[in-house]
Length: 156
Image (cartoon, rainbow, N blue to C red; front, side, top):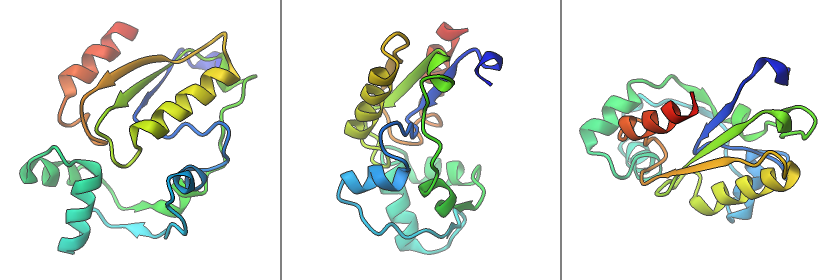
C-alpha cells in the first residue's frame, strides 16, 4: 500500500532487488550454507559474543556492546535469510526512500550496501535513493544516535 507510506528509510539494512533473498546476497560474498537458527543475544558463549561484537559493533566498548544486546530479543535467522520480499517498481518503487550507509558495517559490508542501492536506483531511476553515510558499524545507531537523528530530521 504505497499510498500509506511517505518515505522508507534503510539504516544499513537489507534491500533485496535483483537477488531473491539475503542468503543470495551473502553468497555473492562467498558466504555459503548459512546456518539458520534461533539467535540468543543473551548467550553466555564467549566465542559467540566475540564474533557478534566483531561483526555487529566492532567500534563499541564492551560495555556499549552489552547494553545494545540487552535491547535485542532472540531472533530466528532463518526468517531473515529466506525472505523473498524484493522491491517492486510498481509499489515499493513509488515511495521516496533514503539509505543511510554505515561505512564500517561488517554484517552488511559497504560494497553490498552500495550494490543494493545501485540495483534499486536502476529499477526506479525516476525515484533514486537519497543516500547518507555515517562512519560506524552495523549497530551504529546506538553509537551515533545524534548523527542518525540529524539525518532523519532533514527528512521530516
